[in-house]
Amino acid sequence: MASEAVKVIVRCRPLNEREKQLGCKVVVNMDSARGQCFIQNPAATEDPPKQFTFDGAYFVNQNTEQIYNEIAYPLIEVSGVTEGYNGTIFAYGQTGSGKSFTMQGILDPPSQKGIIPRAFEHLFESCAENSKFLVRASYLEIYNEDIRDLLGPNTKQKLELKEHPEKGIYVKGLSLHTVHSIAQCERIMETGWRNRAVGYTLMNKDSSRSHSIFTINMEICVVGKRQELLRAAKLNLVDLAGSERQSKTGAVGDRLKEATKINLSLSALGNVISALADGRCKHVPYRDSKLTRVQPIPIMRASNCPMWGHCSFPSQHTGS
Image (cartoon, rainbow, N blue to C red):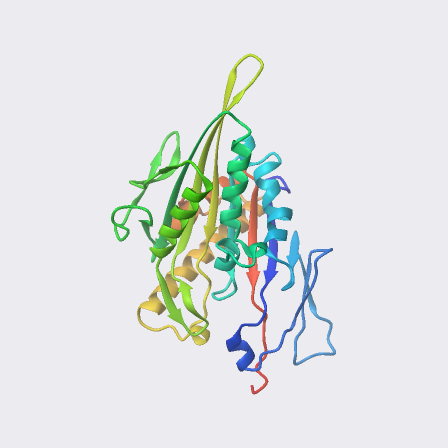
């Protein structure tokens, strides 16, 4: 796999109100110019901080607009989706770390509009340069290892993964919606978002209990000197459920069952990424989870694929 095929960035959010009330301390620092993250052990301040290097590192004072322009924009614009290559952006991290905030975003301030709506705007602006194009969207979630269509007539219906000799792995019965504008894309996203499975935990009152995958299918007709060329590509925008520790979230009953499934699928995803990154690995364990079998993950081998990492501040309770 080419070294530029996968990019990993980390973004740190500020302390939330609950953490402030608990007296938590900030132990993370960033050197954005070098893409480095530093974590200091508050119990051993004389020891040097642990250091990690990423393709990008973004601290609390850096907004989603900056992240999109530096990381996501090249995926779509420069030899990316609009050129006929598949692409995937996904947010990974523990529950409550701000994954949905980065992917979905907020309208005010505008600089914090999420990656998904920014991608809509970017794609339609790029398509407008061509006289003929078709954009279709789908939105699914994986909840307790069951696949559900967030835009279908019955959002609780379980869908099956199938394998086709030509088009590979696909979700049977997943609805595909033709969209003609940015506003239509945003309405579809909002509809699907309302249908997602969420639940309360001690770390996040609106914790995502499923992995959601918003896929934009593009077909662009490019007029050449002698003939018309068709470019087809997919952009997968994935908001993963957060990894959890039961001792931190207080999850019991259904919440605990959900957390177990979430952690197992994220572990399978980690194994797939490790196998892809290891050039000597002959087996990639895609089949260990529906998350890794469904479309966005297998295309990583052949596609540009920025991977998003998130972390909340590792904190120390002053009363502990």
